[in-house]
Amino acid sequence: MYFRLIASVAFAGLTLAGSALAQQGSIAKQTVNEELRARLPETLRSKGKMISVNNGSFPPYEIVTGTEMSGASSDLTDAIGQVLGVTIEHATVGGLPALLAGVNAGRYQFAFGPVGDFKSRQEANDFVDWVQEFVVFAVQKGNPKGITSLDTACGNRIAVMAGGSAERVIQVQAEKCKADGKSAIEVQSYSDQPSSILSVRSKRADAFFSSQAPLTYFVAQANGQLELAGVGARNGFEDLYQGAVVPKGSPLGPVLRDAVKILIDNGTYAAIMKKWGLENNMLKEPGINLGGALPK
Image (cartoon, rainbow, N blue to C red):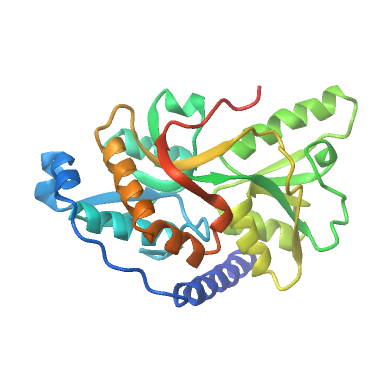
């Protein structure tokens, strides 16, 4: 009960912060692009809607409150829906594996994410990449454990999102720590971002290893309790692209890519990304399956 209360308070803080950001500016309504709309599968055109699935709050991209979602991804999918002449609704599942399974089973048309794009995931899905991301650590203020890289993570308690790319990278590093004769990493896997960051704020974990954009958001809302570490380092990743997820070979992939390109060309994408403090994560143009392999 105590953990649930703290988690609720932390999440309420995210909701209020997200609301404050959302008030910073309105986004122009888009006109329907009939050529793109005609490329949608007939079933989607006739229904007039699509369902985008998420796996819980991933601010400032996705901020989920009950059945409602706000954030950069919400603003972008609203605009994409306007371009395609359909309504895009949002559904939430527990964890990335459930998200991918739901997309591949056809329960949801896509996940806008952004979700990490890697060669191994491209075997079952196509990724419509619309951001570039970096992976860093959120640590307690003053970084008392001196965590500045993967090598300095040895001997510490590191929180990660279950099923994500950061989890795999930190597990590989945990084995390397042992092979090098260093103290082991205690990997703590959580199903959502608020629980992960709460583990650091409550000192049950020494760091949260995740994407820089949401960690920057969490640190800004932590009342001086947290800071970022490992910024500017590779931290086990090469160029990291993230984006929407569709089933492998789905005709929806190229349609979403071209819709995002319209938003880039008319300035809507930049306006939304800047509204949510994501200027450093923008791509000049979207692409399909831009991601490379995870480190072995």
